[in-house]
Length: 259
Image (cartoon, rainbow, N blue to C red; front, top):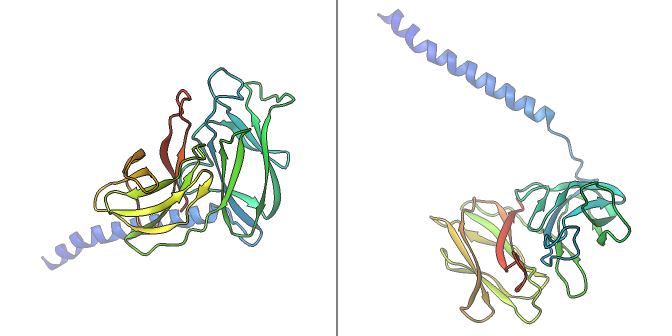
């Protein structure tokens, strides 16, 4: 009986050892395949399309879908549409060598052949080693403009996450406060057009979080984000984009992940 018991309990143990070894091997393989990034020679950039007007554009009432070039080399090969983020709205950033770089936002044509005047805007970003940046293609009175901000997030304590607010709605006469409804905490106050608040730490709610954008000093809600599920120690940017009176571009609040 003793021998049978040893054999019966040994089989799952051996299986667990093999499974653990297999998982460890896969993780090692994945780590070996992961590209090494020299943080002393590179920085990180995220590009956000928040330009609300429908012109200039190649199509009718579509708004400018753009391809983005850096120093004459294509950075975003596929067109970046309104409310899209490159590389994606998760925590990923584009790896950019340190130094001064010129970014060109060019109208996207089906033939990928650009014509004179297709460059919507250009801007220069000075990338420092191991620093993170967000570049917003935003509305302005005369033309599209690029707002560049350094993403100075840190690692929040367990049970907390970090969040900030960017106001990209072109209404210079209004300023906004942003309130986290579930935890009843003001996360940004008196933020004007093309202004970005600092990251602050917010406790993770026991349920989903809702954010409301209010006219400063009032309880008048102009936009809201519901069903937001934060993860402990992550960092997020809420951004208010859109334009009143433009089809499909009503002001709205959305977000992307910084960390």
